[in-house]
Amino acid sequence: MTELWIVLGVAAAASAAIKATGPVLVGGRELPPRALGVIALLAPALLTALVVTGTLGGDDGITLDARMAGLGACAAGLALRAPLLLCVVLAAAVTGGVRALG
Amino acid sequence: MSDRLDPIRRAASGGQPGPGADARERFRAGMRAGMAFVIPTLAIGISFGVLARSLGWGLAAPIAASAFVYSASAQFAVASVLGAGGSGVAAIVAAVLANARFLPMGLAIAPALRGGRLRRALEGQASVDTSWALANRGDGRFDREGLIGATIPQYVAWLVGTVIGVVGSEAIGDPEALGLDALFPAFFLALLVSEVDTPRARVVVVLAAALALALLPWAPPGVPVVAACVTALLGLRVTR
Image (cartoon, rainbow over all chains, first blue to last red; front, side, top):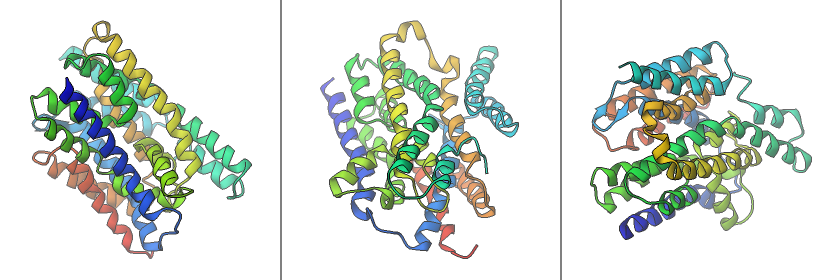
């Protein structure tokens, strides 16, 4: 139990330090156009990787499971311009539904 | 460009870029945008609470983790390493890797933050994936008020969800049976849709997906996401 608290304390401190590094080093200054160009593309790169790892990540490498059906339903909803919340809830409902059937 | 995910951008372009009433309006726009993520964040908080409880973390530790680590990816990383019998050091390394993306993300928001080093360090804590993406104006600049506004409702939802999860873990059962693990990638997909608005962004999406997929089978959790950020270097070519 003590080990758990130490791990959580260090993880919290490390997390805060990582988030603080950029703001402390760069803060307040305007960045050059090239840097802005890179930063503008950081969001699509990051979000894509989070979608891929969140959908296919598992204990042993690439895991194909019910999440794929859920994400498919979410993508279909987004393509049809359904409300954001509906699309996200649909992903969970379809994933849960496919698991219940399988 | 998708319009329903851009209340902050619209508020930012609607008024003068100066401080004052416009800043308050952008803060409120950020809060409204963050509200859209309250229910999924609540649900993921619940799944973290249930998972931590099932690993014998008790009541206080999972809640403290959500209050002070405040990062789903780092908290799930710690839980999965410790749950699999890994060492404390391995759990910390996993948390750091899972959150390493906040280094480039912090550099990106830095010019938008205000005040001295300590204040900027504190304001930088408001950076979470969803708020960061919402506050991103798309030209490499960020909206400070929108970022902080969007994080507040999500922080509350994350904490409340965790409390519900640890207290009600027996009644809730298995979060995976409810498909709650699909919420995380689903809301990143929803955010991604509004980012893919230039040919160059589409190229980055394809490259980032390929890189993440290639690394996923063998790299430690968190590494594929950090590596995929490298594809943003395509932005070094300034001419559009």
